[in-house]
Image (cartoon, rainbow, N blue to C red; front, side, top):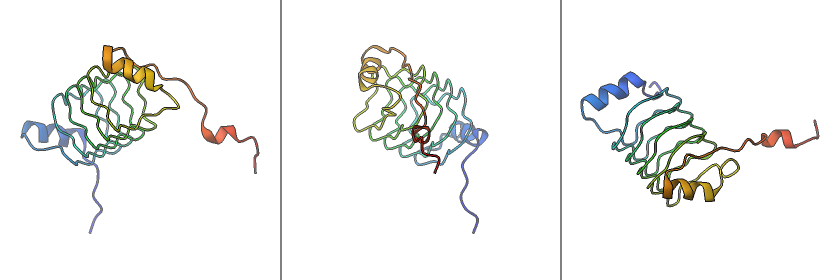
Length: 143
């Protein structure tokens, strides 16, 4: 039996046109640059390593979604439900979270501060990501 594969952007667009649910879909590694998913439900979706640059995710239900290592640069997450979502290692540069629900959300706290996240939720201010060296580079011992 073949292993399941992630959906393509064209397949997602077809599902949207047909009004099908995106809850639990596998979109790992999929290029969804600029996609408009405003107000859609992607509960428990697998979006790890997905490209969501400039995506409109305002009002989207991402409860329990995995966005681990996703590129969300300049995405709009205003009013999104991110409860229990995993955004660890994600690129959140320029993201806005105005009015987002972030209870139990995992953020890449080495790169953004919780104070900045809360400010974005309250005001819509875009996040600025701090550059950090890889953990591997911190070890000076070559062996």
